Amino acid sequence: MQPDTDLNHNEHPSGKMNVHHNIRNVEDVVRRYTDMVVRIAFNNVRNIDDAEDIAQNVFIKFMHAKGFESGEHIKAWLIRVTVNMCKNHLSLFHNIKNEPLHDNIEYISAKQQELLDDLWKLPANYRNSLYLYYYEGYTIPEIAGLLGKSVSTVSTWLIRARKKLKLILIQGGYER
Image (cartoon, rainbow, N blue to C red):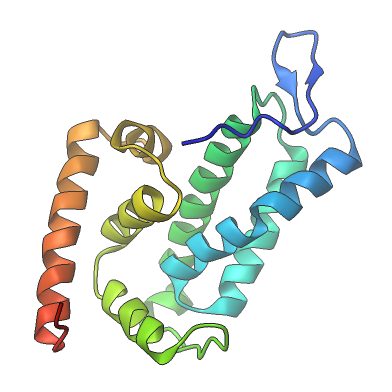
C-alpha cells in the first residue's frame, strides 16, 4: 500500500504533524478521500443519500480533529470514523425497522449491481474487511488496526467472507 505523503504538513509544537492546518489542506483531504468515504458508507448503509450525509458528517468531524501524523494517518482515521458513523446510523431506531432503499446507481452495470446485492447479504464486518483488503489495498494487520480488532479476527472474517460470498454467487447461478 502506498502512503499518502503528498499532503501539506506543518510541524505542531507537540511534535505531531498538523496536516490540515489551513483551508487548502482540508479541501485537499476532502477532494482526495470523498469517493472512498462515500463508498465505505454506501457499502454499509445501502442508500446513496445516507452515505453522502455520513460522508459530510465525517468531513465536518475531520475539520475539528487535530494531531494527525501523516496523510496515511488521516486516511485510516477517515475509514475508522466512517465505519463507526455507519454503525451509529444503522443502530438508530428508525433504521432498524425499515428496509434500506434499493438505489439504482447509474454509473454501475446491472451485473455490478447484482454483485453489490450479493455483497450486501454478508454481515457488515465481512463487507468492510473485503472492501478494505481488495479495494483500498490494506493488509490484514492494517485492517485489524483500523477496525480495532485482532489480526486473527480480521483474517477469520476474510476467510469466512470469501466462503460465504462464493456460496452466494454459486447459488445465484454464477459461473466462472
